[in-house]
Image (cartoon, rainbow, N blue to C red; front, side, top):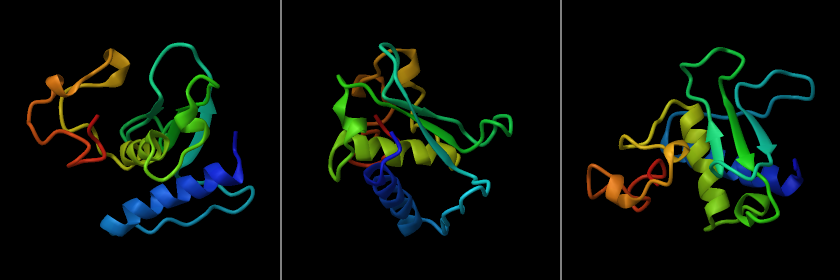
Length: 130
């Protein structure tokens, strides 16, 4: 779904990054090429979302993908303070080159705070934590 609601929440997450970095995001015009793209997918397995770091082939750079299933409502209706909005901000962080603070990944199972190397590796300290 590429609804005005999803677009507004993605722009809000981009603004969150702009607020704490020296990055200015600009909408690409109709038919223009963008550096960041957003997509949705449906699946019964896997994580809530994924994104590509900048060190991948050009065709994948800047892509972030979000699970849209009726059984997983957070990405269907991202809102301020819910996991869908946090997921948008987290995945945008990956497209900007940020990884997780620890050596874990949701694609490799279901990480918990017990997998963290440091006590501060939580969402209370970093949007890039699980």
